[in-house]
Length: 136
Length: 136
DNA sequence: ATTTACGTTTACGTTAACGTCAATAATCGC
DNA sequence: GCGATTATTGACGTTAACGTAAACGTAAAT
Image 1 (tube, protein in one colour):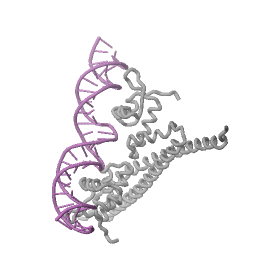
Image 2: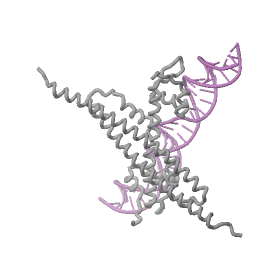
Image 3: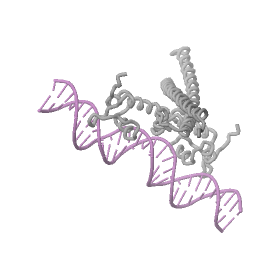
Image 4: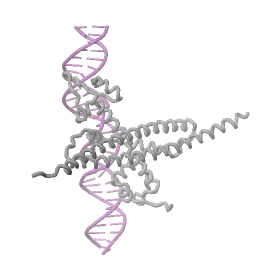
């Protein structure tokens, strides 16, 4: 991997966000690009972090939650106590995610029903068109 | 079903929200309880709507999106055009929900990895404790 | 009769996550 | 060398979704 470097508008375009958004994430400490003079340069690591942030946002996480989630990956966890606490966090996160999956499945089932009803209704009106031609 | 009626604090307690939240939802037109004098009375339909709203919120929907979603269920859709447009909405919603499911599955996989690493690390430190007893 | 508990309205406050200028600097194509 | 684009740094504005506080009504309990 060539350790590619990205400009801010590259990433903005790629992810469909504004440059303001990316700078805002930096302002909040979520990413720390290097500089060429005043210009920001984004590493692949930065790019991945943005990707993970946006993934988190898609399922309704706040930025703070996104960071917390991402931070679980990198091991600043030295002692036993921290490891146990991290495992607890993992478990509770997993619980939330599973609940969200249940919610989504319920909603998908609802959508299936709605679509069926719609199509039935359309089929009926189709039949009315076909079997009842203009009479005059 | 006895068509039970609920007070605002009943529902607040049941759903773990404040009464302020429930009144806010009414202010925004999401629910329309009846009144006994000035007191609000909530039907089972109201209760279900609140439930659906909170389900939507759990997966990151805005209140507006929640209403739109809920409104797909009740058929104010008379003509062919409306039915087609509703089907389109259903399809796009389904797309979003499936994306969210993918996101969640990715995150769950990440959590599994993190937990594994944690447990390995703990096992190693356990072994250090066990096989290297106090020497003095 | 008044404390206690619950409910209502009104209204200002707050936080998150950006949007939207404006002024300025650096860069690129020609 | 210069106009057009692209980036940067403030700084103020905005929207959603409630929180919070004040001021008041009502009904049961002590």
